[in-house]
Amino acid sequence: MVAAVLSISLTACGGGGGGAAGGDTTCKDFLGMSDRADQKAVIRDYIIAEGDENPSDYVVGVDRINVMMYCDAYDEREGDPISKAYEDEG
Image (cartoon, rainbow, N blue to C red; front, side):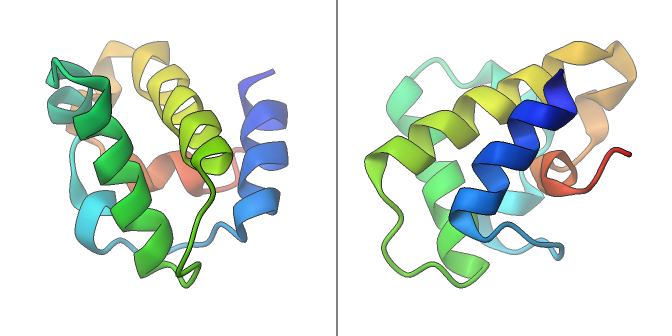
């Protein structure tokens, strides 16, 4: 289920590998952010670094939820950079 949701969202934003800017943020740090706006800023920075210069608020919001699902799925992911949520899990 998570992979399917990620696939839909990441296809919409042209997702990709590589981690720069927001993509280097760890799951632990991302989930520890108390402000939704801070999480969205991290996601927006990552999407921009991956080549989409003007991501829509919808894409940022959906990607935020997908990253939260990825990071929350297993405790051992707390050290993963959030860019791993954009990798194919298949």
